[in-house]
Image (cartoon, rainbow, N blue to C red; front, side):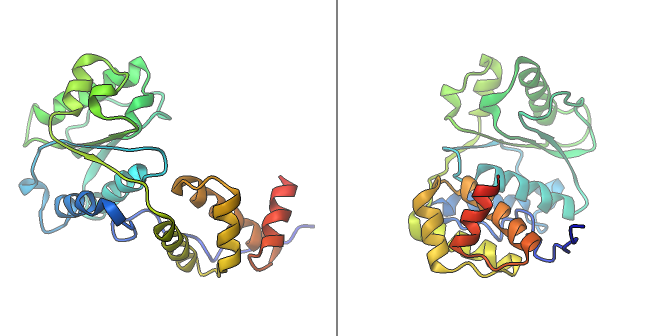
Length: 232
């Protein structure tokens, strides 16, 4: 009978405070100002914002962080990403619309995104809502219908840069500390030298490693990492 292990090292969700900006400080400051409780829904700028950059640059982290910041203030947010196959209609109760991975949208998702964008900027009632979107490409290069592509480039456009190695190490250390686990330098070296170096892949690997260490009741070491990979 396998023993059940309590997952007491559960990581916190994405937040603006936990985002290591590095070369992306201007982006972070823009989102912090907009999503701050002090700004308030009635006083936020309705100018849309689009983030673009390669996989692992932190786009989804920032979008989810903004969504959570607004939810903590009691606001409702419309969310659409490529995994949402049956998107809902625009909801007048939303204070913002968030569109992630727009470069992957199907024709139906593009139709929904365009509808949400138009309703957010020109609502039937109330003030304008904010639109925050992200994709792997700049607006002009997105493989989307023309009317949606042009609207995504209307407002603020920021390119996210990948973090350097020292910054990636800092993020890994910060995430491990948040989970209450020790990630030694030798394990970090192994992760950075043997696996994909983009931050998203590294975070996924840390998730798996943390869960495996909890299940086996062992410290995180290179032998444990190798054992986990061999058991997959």
